[in-house]
Length: 147
Image 1 (spheres, rainbow, N blue to C red):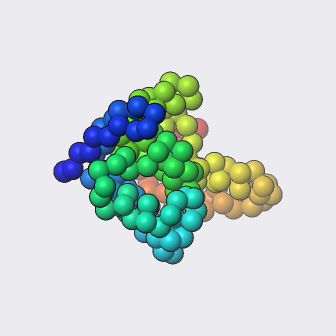
Image 2: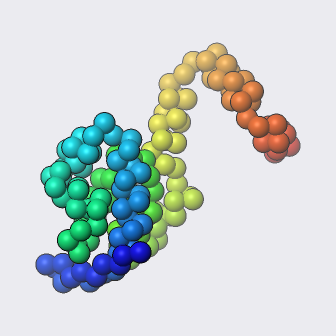
């Protein structure tokens, strides 16, 4: 496991578990057509993305803005990405202001809710039936008891 220590131009000091961030970034990158496409979406150069993905250069994996962009693009928890990038203090502050990831919906979950709201009542009924049919038997029974 590699750990990087960095002092930024603004004087911020931090630790980063480079291995965790590399693993997370590589997993997210796999969902894009190319590394160049991810770099473009993030607004960073391909070489900057490559350095973050390999952990070379002894620098912070990403700044806060790019970590938040990565969270937005990937649907991953901003807190998880910030912590992996060595920005635990920023993740803690965001959670203190807006709640922990367990208390909030992911981007994908918000998309599902928006789509649900756009459906007709008949489509909602059909989708609800499909979801019930797809859910594991134990989960269906738990939902029936709590409904």
